[in-house]
Image (tube, rainbow, N blue to C red):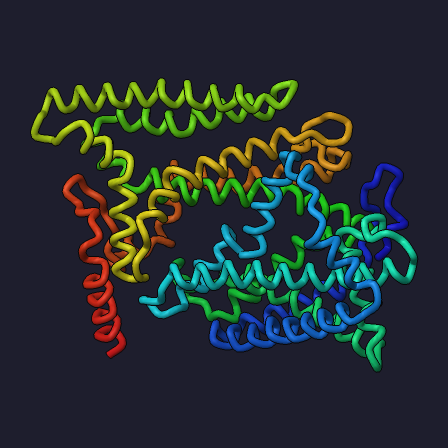
Amino acid sequence: IGGKTVSKDGNPTRLVWANAAYLLLVWFFIFLCLAFGMKWTGRIAYFTMGFPIILLFVFLFRAVSLEGAGGGIKQYIGQWDMTVLEKGDVWSEAVAQIFFSLSVCFGVMIAYGAACPRTEPALLNSFVVGLSNSVFSFISGLAVFAALGHLSFLTDTPVAKLKFEGLSLVFGTWPVVLGTLPGGEHWVRLLFFNLFLLGIDSAFSLVEAPVSIIMDKAGLKMQRWMVCAIICTLSYFSSLLYVTDAGLSFLDVVDFYINFTLILLGFFETFSAGWIFGIEEQIKTFGVDAVITYMSANFLSVFAASLVWFTAEENNVWGGFVTLIVVYFFFFAMTLYHLYVKVKEDPSCGTLEYLLEQLAFGNVFYLAKEMSHVVGVLPKAWAVLIKQFIPQVLLILFINLAVTKNKVGETAFGHYGEYAAWPYQTIGIASVCFAFVIIMVGFSISDLFASFDATAHGNIKALEYTSTSDSSDEEYITGREVAKKEDVEANK
């Protein structure tokens, strides 16, 4: 790939023009997949996902039939190294990998969901997508380790000592196994065609998100193929750094820093749904002091505990939990005090227990109920998790990853992989900061994004939470039937 010409400090010195041409070809195919509408994109996806699945099972059945495959399978599912879980960064990177694998926090699911029927059951679809992803990941791992077992047999080397990781898990195992089939070289050619399909399938899904937003929300009077052409052209030029002679180094760095971006986006998405939705009404009903102290109990406690957990000289697990409990109950006691004062001043607002329940769950229970009118029943467990668990856990994982040390004892954030500060660390950090700045601008100057908000144009009624909103679940099904009736009338 031309990596022998990098400078002594590892910086790029040239473009690899052959790779740049291949990259242009890839983006041209991505453009063709998107330019003619989502229906065509869906039809193409049947092939770009269906064919790799067929080839995966061919690879699996062939791999498990080879000599020594059992040793690799035993290494995969029969021998557990639980000490790996003691490494803090493993948890954060695993969550980010699942986000990436599921296309969560990229806008892809939102774009594709918008193309589904309005009353499509979101809960069922979420389970199907999540479980399917995990099942195929497990099957892929089984096939790869069966191949490693065969390679172990051929080289008389224990599976654990085979020098395969990262990209070599694919390029070092699949060609060997497929080469044992009749007409092996043609199967190897199919392997590279398969990887090409998987690559463009992921890419046109990622590009579909901004295309859908621009076409559906921004109100631009442009044809779809023109929007796709502009985005694909910009994407091509922004990805040229990956076809320099140091392209794999850039890929490694960006792949690490994207973990921060995904966790950060996941945190703010769940924080917005669980805490920002209805906050104006909550401040009006319970008072700003009660709302702020309750929010502090949930997030300052987690932040303080994370500092103890991850920055102490030794893993101070119990010290972190003590900090979490002390800080949480300090601010929670202040919340109770402010609600108690509210009850004393205005007994008609309800009891202390009622106000606390509404402060903790009222807005998310109402959100779940109103969404259930369209997408089917969302259990109250979803509402509880989206406010009281998921954003807190994502905050812990973000801090955990941010303070992870590299091999020389420096924080990996800003010093990942011992790459030079310029251009590698700078580009990685800039990608995280760019996402953070966009989020902060959206919070502080929301009018800048008004053109993307259908409720601002009167096309869709905004969902509003008030102190009198009913968050019970008595009307889940009837509301869904109303939504179906509205869709039928709209289609007519």
